[in-house]
Image 1 (cartoon, rainbow, N blue to C red):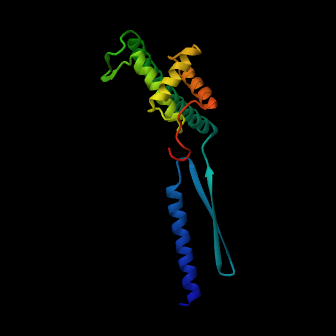
Image 2 (cartoon, rainbow, N blue to C red):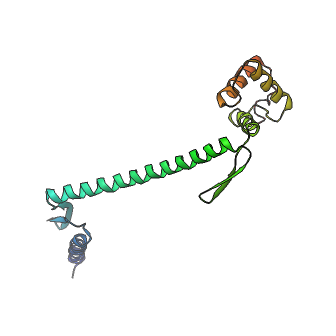
Image 3 (cartoon, one colour):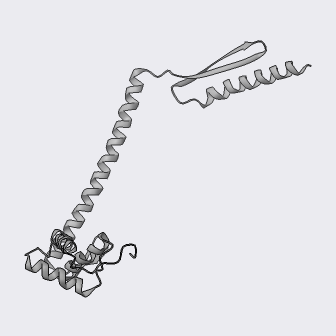
Length: 181
């Protein structure tokens, strides 16, 4: 048997296997159509997937996918709502019971006092503005005096941020050297 005939047999056998296995692997409601053409001893095959589902099946599949996505969105929204309710419950309790510990749904925590909350906001300036040295007692006194003199609300983040920016602009804060933070 010549080399050319052997290659043709191997090519024909592999094409037959491809056709058999290609059809077996196809998705439900789909077929793979394979067309082979032999020209001058060379065989070339092309395959295409044909969707043989009815329009009703296609619509039903799309509807099912839509319902599944809708259920996912509803579950995410329910989770967010539950988290908001949890946070609101803790905040409501802590407004009344400052400085006390809380326990809800197996979780525990500590309600900040006004002083702790203000100190937290003050230290938050350092996390937002890396050149600011929050541990410098002069900076703390400068910001507190400035807020008091200008009637800024110490219970809101906005008051702290505004005081910081104005004092920085005036050059009245001790800042880290650029690149050392």
